[in-house]
Amino acid sequence: MFPGGKKGMKDLMKQAQKMQNDLMKAQEELANKIVEGSAGGGMVKVEMNGKNQVLSLKIDPEVVDKDDIEMLEDLIIAALNEAQDKVSKTSESEMGKLTGGMNIPGLF
Image (spheres, rainbow, N blue to C red):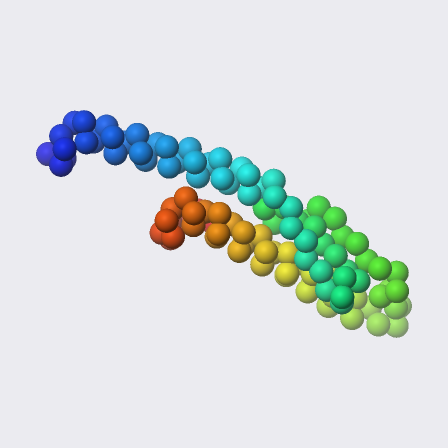
């Protein structure tokens, strides 16, 4: 028998349902958050949402050099990586508040 009997089990189920609802709401809110990653002192900027979808890419014309495309590619990659890192940290922080720091597989 479950400790606390049927009432204890019902209370536990209610808590689990509330936590699930809170987590779903938090995931939706995170999906709508927008973060910015930049590189080259802001010469390349990327906006990304919480689903890791790139929303915009801005490139300062001064950084465009047809003889050094590799540098521009590196700046774009660096800006994308910074944005993805910010999305990941934001997600971990927000979900950690709800889960009390427990690592729940498949949540992030």
